[in-house]
Amino acid sequence: MKISTKVECGIIALMDIAINSENGNVVKVASISKRNNISAKYLEQILPLLRQAKIIGSIKGASGGY
Image 1 (spheres, rainbow, N blue to C red):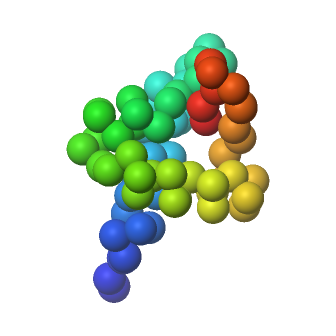
Image 2: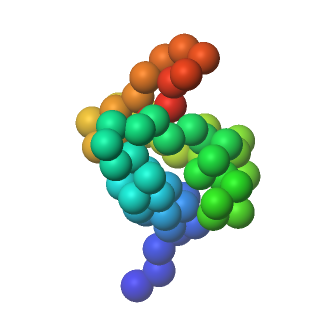
């Protein structure tokens, strides 16, 4: 069974958010990108889809993230 790159990166991002959001910390796209060597622009296409599906939540603003 083949998994698309978009799905693979989405799963990696979900795992990164789960690991790094302990104690209610916000995880920024740039930090996910840096830790996992995934383009930030690509993550910016994937993460809103996960938010719309109510899999993750987001916080807007300068100190925002997922």
